[in-house]
Image (cartoon, rainbow, N blue to C red):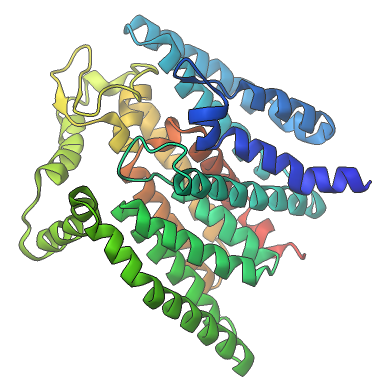
Length: 400
């Protein structure tokens, strides 16, 4: 019993997080320049075979239907002449997202839901820990900017709050905030801002002296930590020209856009994706299949449309329209909006506002990256978050 307890709670999420971490992507499971996490699938089968109910989640009709659609999109990608390894990689991410969603949303009772939520919490914490370890020890530095699967912050925060792990919640927020600052991605910092807004809102649940004192102490600790660490962050930004450009100059570009409506070339490219979709909506009506995510960053070319500057990795909407067509994209967007809308029903105002913060953060994340469809860790965390939102009323009701 003790073995099963620690295996379920710590060993399984630790091993799975390691398998889907950048340490495995670039080192442990990288063979000939390609990442092969299939050992993770073997481990998952071993783990979930112990839990036959969970295995049933993965063999139900929706999962099998998804697998069929992935195969169809893979064949279409082959017909368009795309690389078979790229096709397989994207299909693998979509399947991981769907299975993660089903894992949470198919919980039959409160005890099963608690177990799955706890598993998701530790998996998320381990994933972020491995990302940070990877960058600190320079196991791989392919880019000046450091990518983190920031959508996963909501999985950790929601689960930690539900279990009353306030120390973990505050510590996680501080560590991930520091990581976001060093990552040089503006988007990471903005998601942290959303997370802090969500966190601060709990002070107003029921205003008592104890709750106010706890909230104020937490805020003071976080602010003091920021003040102490700010000089080292600024030194890091000033340590090289590329750090300065990504760490500070792009914030000035954003401020300039807000004040004077003047866009940089990079922002112009990001906005051009939407005009590209609108101008070619008839051709993009049908799917073009998998295989585009790993194409060059500087230019995207479709078989039947003129090329466009930029990368399909920069925008999930752009990726979806190219991959599954405009009709399929509308279906996905409708599904996500319905997910959050259903979750908001019968909530009090403060809970609706918290859910709105998560929804806006979610839309923002998918608007600035298509990593959900090209990075396994991000795909899994996105699926877990969607599963929690699908079961949001259960999430609020369940007692731990």
